[in-house]
Length: 336
Image 1: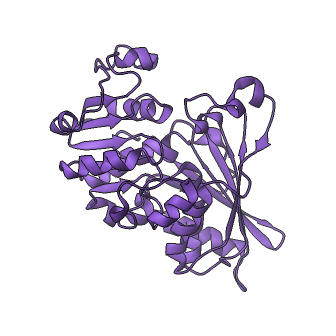
Image 2 (image 1 turned 90 degrees about the vertical axis):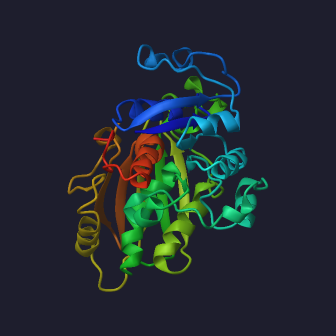
């Protein structure tokens, strides 16, 4: 049994995480913290937990938190997370960080993309990226794991096996993604307000989204060099789910059948990636930790369709999967 705590326990990913941890037989939730809701019972912030968890939300105090926790989930915003991660690691905790603070390869790149300085620059570039399907051994021994971005999860799982086998061109990759409104978080934003997004589909952050460098860097590790990937997200009026269509150029002599066979074989023994002959939909993976993949020819290109639940495989489910790997539990525990 391990003791877990959540720093920043009031958002959508936090409540999804709590729900998963409550059904984990090897976990006890001992700390939930929030700056804005300290002193309140958790059910007053997350009514769906009524009668399921009696823990009171408290203010974050590093020494008290560390004394009661073995594994911390840090659900704080970008740039606000790294100071807390640094404090907790110094006190001997293992940490799974939901922010982008440790996903990129350098502090300079983080500052360029996110416009903020970094409180723990020495650790950047040394933290495993939290996709066990690709980085399991590094995650197993890690003190800190960088939980992936939700959009990048769909693209990286689709692309990594193909660039590793040198089946596709690493230039002119297009990642076209649709997301539900929960991807915007719990803090109200005008574009995600019901009257603004209902009965409407809109592109946003075209050419400027912060997840594009993350996709390029992580897939580039598998390519052995940089890749050129263009990412365009769209907001869809549904609560949860991401569907990404990734358009790529096969290399000479490579057909769609070989690309399909490579993905199917690469993920054959992975519990949470399913290759399907039929086109997947977000409803197929809703409330699960699965990523479903399919391929289709599109003229001279091949399209890989990749779908996840953004709050589970795109966030909290991935975090629990990483925790299971780090502590030697069955990887599917609490996620079946």
